[in-house]
Image 1 (cartoon, rainbow, N blue to C red):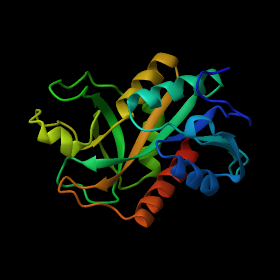
Image 2 (cartoon, rainbow, N blue to C red):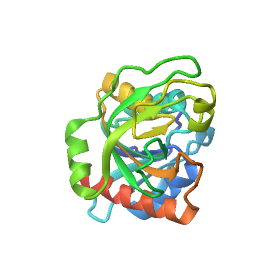
Image 3 (cartoon, rainbow, N blue to C red):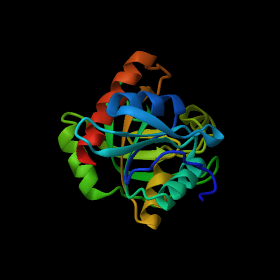
Image 4 (cartoon, rainbow, N blue to C red):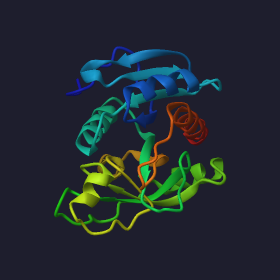
Length: 220
């Protein structure tokens, strides 16, 4: 039995991973028919269901931050997950990015915290990533810096400028752990905050997540 997840329903080989438990419910209802809750332990809501095409899919919350996400992914791998797409939110580092834009991740860099530097680049699964780009015509293709703290707090520490289009808190950890486990993993992030602090409203964020979710189902 995995250390954190306590599944009470099947776990599919293909999964959509989100940080927020509420978003896992949203996408389970959007992407599958009559989803069943597969996990509620530790507040990490997970669901199992069939897509309209009859494909088995797990939608699982990973919690906040890289350590939580990496641990959940290890449990999912133990339960049989072999391919996954992370659908998350991010803060724009590039001023060219607007609220609600989707960014298919080309590579991720981990930043350990104040005073630490940029980690080595971690790449997503190339096949899944190429397929996502085709599905999400018009989406940006760029890099993410995964931080231990929000971007605004990171910038306040006087840390070096991030060489990435967007910032989040878990993509680098997920991609790194996925590579170690042999889980093919790609990521698409929705910009829910600009560098200036403007935030996307909840309905627009839900719409962006649903668009990304349908693309994930198409490539898994």
